[in-house]
Image 1 (spheres, rainbow, N blue to C red):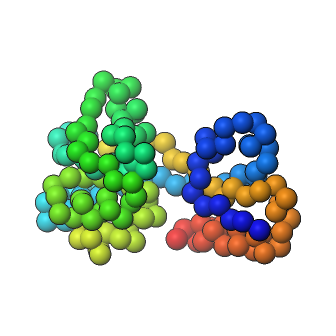
Image 2 (image 1 turned 120 degrees about the vertical axis):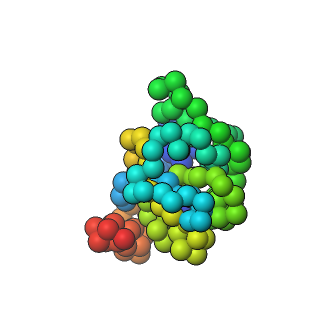
Length: 162
């Protein structure tokens, strides 16, 4: 049995690859904005003007300086100043802690790490689309009781709102 974690659906290039796997959405996730606590006295929802004026750090596994927020801003004729793009969330939070930059991170990550990194959180100034957090597994493991038990844990946690 193999468990694959955090592999985007687009990684499966052919229909044959996609048919060999099952994707099960575990929960929907949305975003919060984080900024250094001493720099940003952020209200519960940051203004679009303040959001666009601040330097920005983006999570980017591929290293590109664009994300879903940039696509949304483009559709409104707006841009933000992305200054760095580490590949994972914890380096982004560490960078925000020591700069005047902002970052938009998944809602479940922000409050868990905000105090450790001395960050304030706020609602985003735009309606950013949510995204599914999913488990992808091989089709032969569809009825594996151990895997079923493991995949049931995130469902229970999500229902509690953790």
